[in-house]
Image (tube, rainbow, N blue to C red; front, side):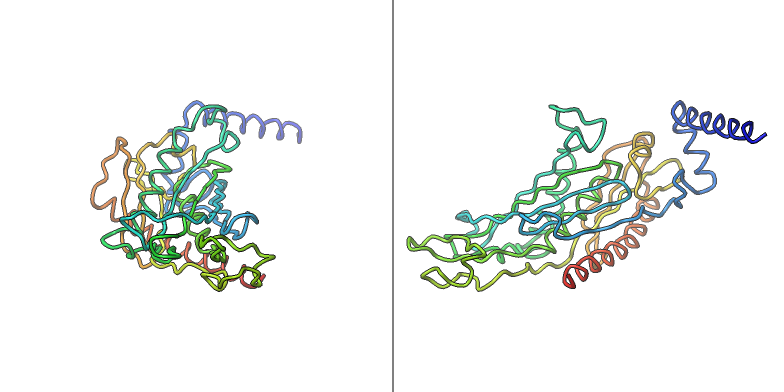
Length: 311
């Protein structure tokens, strides 16, 4: 009797799995009728999110961000450069996004992932545009803080983000990792050498073995404000699904990504096509969901910073 029940359960599970593989959209729509998803989330709820700062010991700032199974590792490395003539009192930021084959079976060795340049462009537009709207200081980072010696030396911040697991909402996780890495960033100590050039002072020489005074007295944090956070939603018929998985993204193709700053102001709205029109009411609902999500992400980031300071 017990074996019959077990075989019946296995048969039922196999039938459900086969139906999910053969008719993925119909499978998901059965859940949508009850305003729920296969992972038991309500339609407007994001997946569990976590942050760990200082994940890369060799970087000047780093963070590991997880949204559900989607995992991003961000690292910031600072290097001294000569600033351009048009902005002699400002540093620069360079952003790269990578999707190695380990992150998804859809990414083939030797072939760049199709999503990588799209996410990279979104990140650059969001972070750099947020820096350079109207003036050089209207967003997250004041580029003048990256200046060392006017017209001669400034910091170049190289931000590299690696996708370790691609299970949907890649931009949201990448942006969160980037913001957390800049929050963890400590700008190195630099000094002038005998030739008058700015050089980074290593930790063992930080106590003052150079002949000239350090340009900056100690490691310092960047002053960050108006941090950008995002939420990607799927529009499907009359439904709005927040923080979609890779499976949901593959079968319901209309995505809307809303970026707000930490004060709730709209930074950008991105909709890369799709069969469903984004009516004003749907966009307003997506923005409302994003505002709620921003509160959650700010709390998660503040908790990660507090944990780092305690350690």
